[in-house]
Length: 176
Image 1 (tube, rainbow, N blue to C red):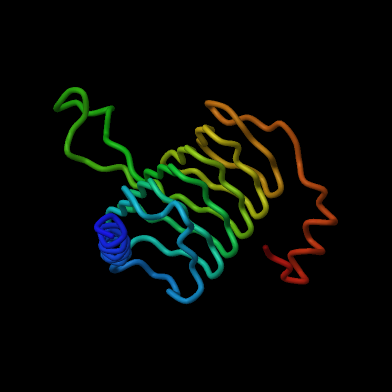
Image 2: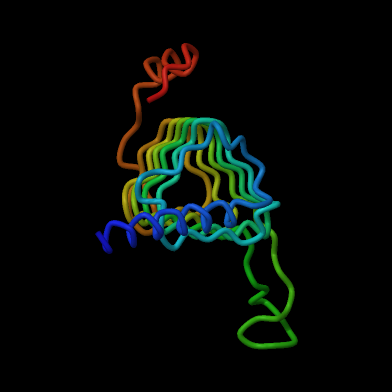
């Protein structure tokens, strides 16, 4: 009995924490899905600089630093443990080591219908094209072309989606 009550209180508390984390984020609350694992350690820094498209699924243990701007498209599926940084420090400083107070803004953009596996890191300036698949544990620097499948650190291409099938499903808006 006691543990049942404790579990209900904990679930309610975690839902309140998630709502607080999303305060200021541009998204449609009825269209963004917080996955089953989204009840612990979910953190968004600078939420006003984050936009999330309809139908996107976010799972827990995510850290998104949207200082430089982060845009996540529609119908993306994002695994547990995503880390996103959208700015970097000025390591070329002539004033201080290892870097100075200047922030170098490098927005991160994730297209529509992207599948991001668990424990992925998107570095400042990363751009992930529509329909791309990012394998678990990958670290993405730079651009990932639409429909490309990548893995590793740094992420490298290991395959591609069938472009005609992908475009057909995208046009018909057939999302899972």
